[in-house]
Image 1 (cartoon, one colour):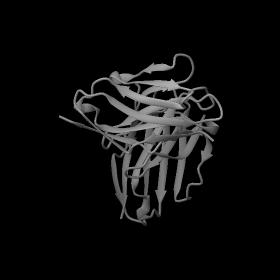
Image 2 (cartoon, chains in turn green, red):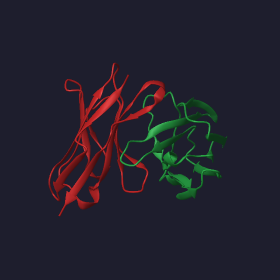
Image 3 (cartoon, chains in turn red, blue):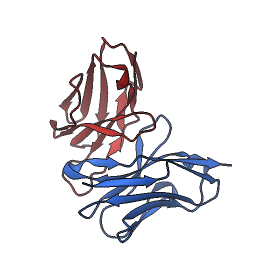
Image 4 (cartoon, helix red, strand yellow):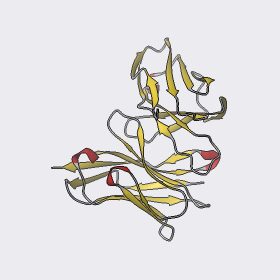
Length: 115
Length: 112
């Protein structure tokens, strides 16, 4: 299995809702990432988990809350989002951070629309 | 800090023509460089990577890139474009703390 699976593919939520994005990989990777991608822009790093511990938080607002329950799963909990948070959220994984060539495998993304 | 610059936000070619997407890097240490492709409403797929060793790197779908230290470049090429190559292409460099730093992207348009 060489895939990163993200659910849901599409999500529409109101500003008062609580929702979660899920990401799963079964490649034995020990590093997992959340990226945010706005239209016609490159992906921007949000969070990195290494061995199930949060290692990088790129000053992301607290309305985004990541969680890594185990080495295969990564969640992004969403609460009180703003319309400007509408974007494609990409999950990725890699063998581990701190190696010479950190090749990331990306999922297809979850497209989030905040009304 | 490491960074990459992609020249040209859009590149248009005819089917069968040469594809050339430009990427220049800035790095104080030997860089690790990547090209990713993103099809509409999809995630990113690795095309190829340069770490060390051979400067001409071959990737998937007939793409290749050449690392030129003297020019600080890592341009992506394909001898003959296919309609299915139409996509967004991102050059990236591995930055500090193992972060992947992306360029702004180049949209490749292929006309029949």
